[in-house]
Length: 75
Image 1 (spheres, rainbow, N blue to C red):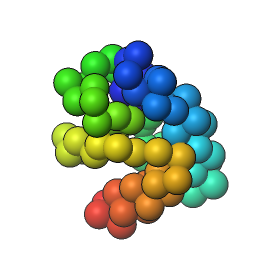
Image 2: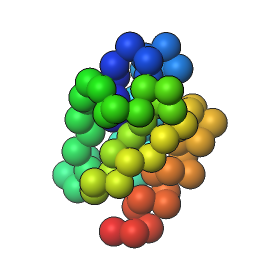
Image 3: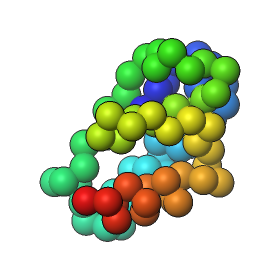
Image 4: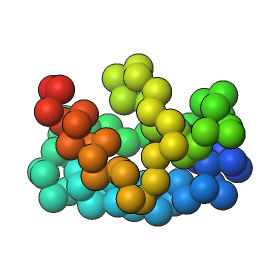
């Protein structure tokens, strides 16, 4: 998950907080590793999340649940 300045300004902190909640709610702490990173090279399209190598752009607090559950279903 990008926490660079562009993504930070677009709400990365709130997305991270919600991701932590989702992981805890699903009891998936052992299977899912949340990791912060700086620039993912898509600064104008943030917040950027990378899941298993796939870059997901324009993630927000309103879309993170869908992104999370879609990724979990693929597992």
